[in-house]
Length: 60
Image 1 (tube, rainbow, N blue to C red):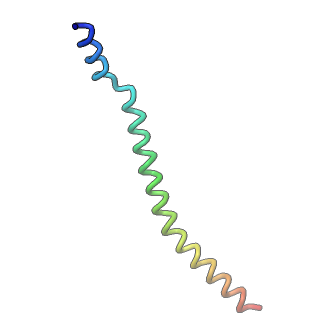
Image 2: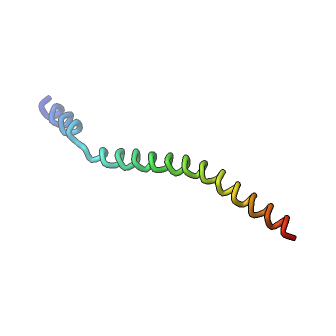
């Protein structure tokens, strides 16, 4: 029985997977931030290209 208790204690004290979870959370937050920024940038870039296209059409 004491061997079982030692195994359970060893499993509870094992922190080897903790770093992986933290890195996954950080990567997920960076991904969400990138998606939000790209959505905002997409509108600005579309507007800029539309304006340039309109000016080029009017110039000819």
